[in-house]
Length: 119
Image (cartoon, rainbow, N blue to C red; front, side, top):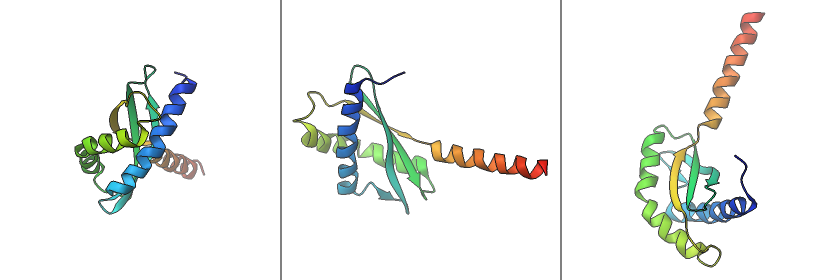
């Protein structure tokens, strides 16, 4: 589905604010690794934001995601303060694990394995 210009604008505002909030709350470094926002998608009605998180060197991603979800009320409160003059309504924030990098790495390994077998 193609995102509208407004959806992209809201996503950009949220990404900037959420990056600042993650640093402020110490959510960008946890469980011995790094957490970053890889993508934000906004529903067409602008009422829900799906935040995809990329975990680097984090052993237990589910636990790290759970920690972030437990602090989501505080993230939402700080987000409201940061973007209240830019957005009329603050969307519902849903956090998800982004496995894109892992899937690309696995696919690369499979391609390398196929190359070895074809030699």
